[in-house]
Image 1 (spheres, protein in one colour):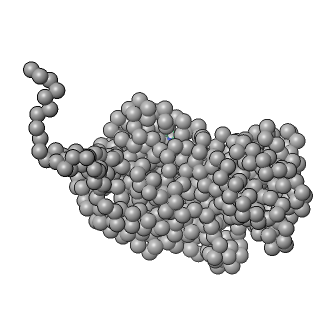
Image 2 (image 1 turned 120 degrees about the vertical axis):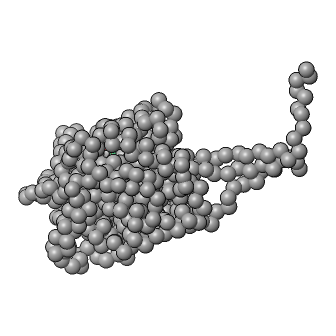
Length: 525
Ligand code: NAD
């Protein structure tokens, strides 16, 4: 998912933030003070081993903060706290209206702290300040959505057993202790898509943010405590995927693991969870098509819109978006005009530190992420792709990479098949609707995709045939908290957001009450 920033303040008119960045740096230091970033049973702690990890500023590689590097001992303590808080209550039996009120209070606190948390996200994940703040707004929306969903709900469903002497109901109960594992690209947003429904349903949890971007999750835990969440309901362990995420996925006292991240780690989580038959929800990667028919470009306005949105689809947050429109599939007859304009505009994207005024794209999150991007581009060029824009790092510090357009790509290229998770757009062409659909579906993933056409019938036909969890018609990237988000194929299992996003965190229980019990006499003796 990405942001629909239309209507938000223009990146070009951002005021100078150097002063507030210094304030944010100080805030970061306060939040991770004494390196106590592990939160269990309502107390902030260092790692049991005393180990720490440096969190780097991707805009210059400097140390932004030092956090606790948790291990299996810390995980076991956090799971034990969450287990006790679930089994002994009272959170799971608190009336839904009170749980909803807690979520609303958290949303209010996030609104109050929008600027400082948005800035912290910008510094940690390298996104622009505008995006960091928009993330906080989306988090507020998620908390409010799940609060509204449970507050207005019936307590259960009466089932007709076909017998007036039977009272039969289906009720929902929380799953139990949830392990929540999140990635680095939308640290706070991904956390909220899990935390809000988990709490709304009455669960307790242990969250493990990405070791690359843990800061705003630490801040969110502070706000949950301030909102009045009982101790032990929310727990946090900062640390590496293995051992922290691996231990959580395998832990016998964890009932559900909800993971957002890459395919490789997601497969490991599922394997580890199988041993104890936990419930598993996976939100994985995508290789998302953006299909442009020539009729969408018939007018100058239509052409400009389709190009502009293709740019946004591919390059917002430097392409580090699971639903990035990283595969442009454009009708042959408009291909040259479209790619020429797209490349011209890609070259003009202003990259820099996300808190600097006028910056439109920040750095990649790490040196490793940039190297991965470079290796994909080099392989594509060796396989015959034509470079139309970018293809290099700019001079200077930080993990920056220029927005890159690779033309004349084809389905056998690695760059077309694998998720790059960087600012790289591949271009393929088609001649018929049939071919367009085939190309759009030619991926092992199935997270999201867009189709651009002025023909309403074609739009519905193509959208209906696209095997992706979200399909945008004449748009790209917007999502709604009330609409399910997730993927077909290897993009994952289950859905976040919407009613299904709450259902993930619930068990259904059928309670059958016989009001006039009698012997069955199945056995005669
Ligand atoms: P990643 O898989 O490297 O890490 C994700 C999380 O898993 C991190 O917290 C990491 O520490 C943890 N982890 C790593 N190994 C683990 C293991 N063996 N057991 C348990 N946990 C482990 O992913 P990333 O690089 O942080 O994020 C980028 C990926 O996330 C991309 O593939 C992107 O498409 C995906 N993503 C998907 C969505 C979605 O909604 N489908 C949203 C955002 C990101």
